[in-house]
Image 1 (tube, rainbow, N blue to C red):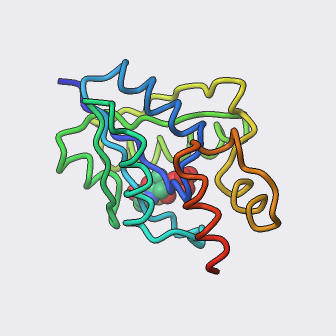
Image 2 (image 1 turned 45 degrees about the horizontal axis):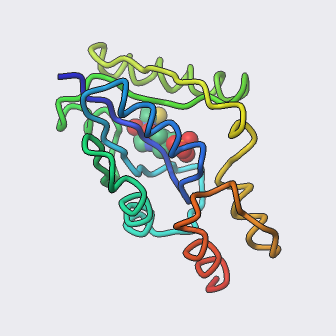
Image 3 (image 1 turned 45 degrees about the vertical axis):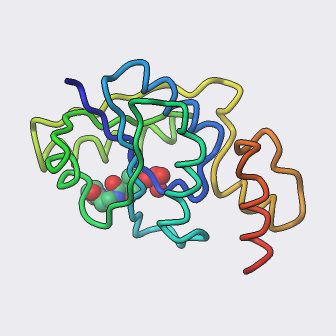
Length: 160
Ligand code: PNS
């Protein structure tokens, strides 16, 4: 059974992330979306809130689950018997960062492989940081995050 873990900050999940989850669900037997700590980023949503937003969106996807994890990705992989890290790529800049992460994770556990999926061009410009900035200054985030979570994002920003 090919189990893939799709890790990220997901603060919040975007249409680009959801597209990778859906395509990953077709490519692998099981996809575990892992909301992880990125020590370089200051979060907007609490980790469990991010998990709850993702849960709303994966309801119809039988082989997809979501959870949060605060340690090393590689430890979660071992715990779940997963051998594939699934990552989305939007640009060459993404690739440079992701290649280093993939090599570090390979060094930590040589049995693990990172598989990159190119973003659909329609989502290539979307990032969680752009979503937060647009929402903060009252712009429309339609088309950037799934419809179902737009009110959650707006109310979270307003509560800050
Ligand atoms: O969506 P992001 O912020 O690009 O995701 C990065 C993330 C959270 C996947 C990465 O920071 C991560 O794997 N964090 C967990 C700690 C870890 O295992 N780091 C790898 C060795 S440096």
